[in-house]
Image (cartoon, rainbow, N blue to C red; front, top):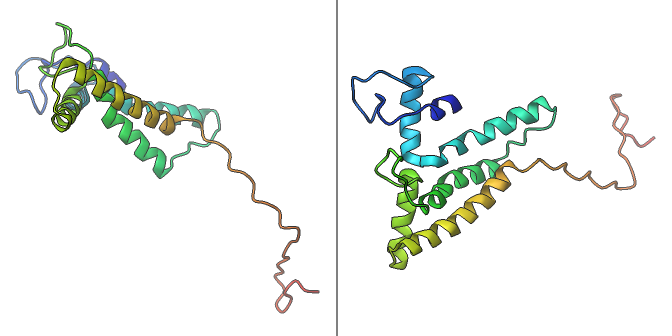
Length: 173
């Protein structure tokens, strides 16, 4: 996945771009078909898709718990959809191959949607919107990838209930 994103070019054939040009993606046609919509949707935020897999692999190799919880998954998805707004706040260089900002379609959508709500569409407003959403997205990303903490042990009640496999013995004797 990472190699297909790293070797993506806009001129490759994919689902959104029909051309007879040869595939240059190191992962072949499948890599080009995967990378193109992801790069268009998330822009430079696309590598955020890979971060959880890399961290899970590192934790498994270290013998630590992976910590896949519903709250962490939603935080990671929230970060994935908010961080392009921050990237979209930066000016586009001449070498950027897409006709949209660095945050892809998601970044453009955040800038226009929030700009419509507050009634501002200047570069300063887009920068402010991107900064605020980027901070929220960064906090969500931190929560999604932060180390799994050990749960506190259950408190001791001061007594134990003894269970027995012998029929008729209820631990009272």
